[in-house]
Image (cartoon, rainbow, N blue to C red):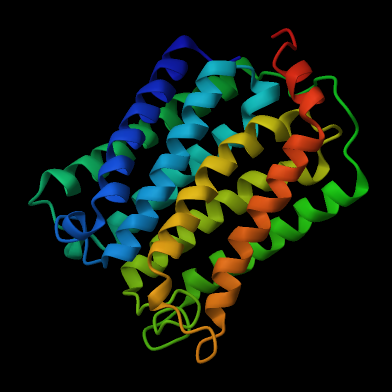
Length: 275
């Protein structure tokens, strides 16, 4: 596996994401006025959900700490850190640094980037294997993974290319108008998830999908809670894109939870795989 330094940074990242995510998710009305850029309470609660999910990805990875089991989760975290840092740099003239919430979010992204850099150096130096025993991937699971990856890639590309006044900024999918800053942050999130799932489309067995799926549940649940708390902001008849927003997360939640339950015995065996 990767170095102990990388593992320590992964744990530190988990703690940072948990603390920041809890503030953003549990006190979105207050945190929206203190955040790193201009956002609504719904957006900041959703970003809080991302952070709580990231905490789960990081802690689960540091707990197992076997590259063959957690490489998709670590790839996601590394990409999330790089991409969200790039968004902050691109919109640096609009970044607010006058509050502890904003500084806490940026410090957490900084820790994530440092973790990613150390991890990449370890990866090039150690070259750990991804080979591990496990149940072959059923055709329908591979198909769902490919579908998931393609859809997220489309969302990421759409957010990256979006311009002011378009579908992404004018409540076409997300039920509130978004600044281009927020749209790019959403695109960075979708890109990180989509690209990290890409290696799973050719994985030979289910083993690396388990820790990714468990942490993924923790990621999806608070995002859905944020949507349900703000359900009054959706106009499903006038702006049907909201159905896609909520429906996509619901489908991901149900499909992932069913898969983990169905293959739960394999999951128990996976965590006993020797490193």
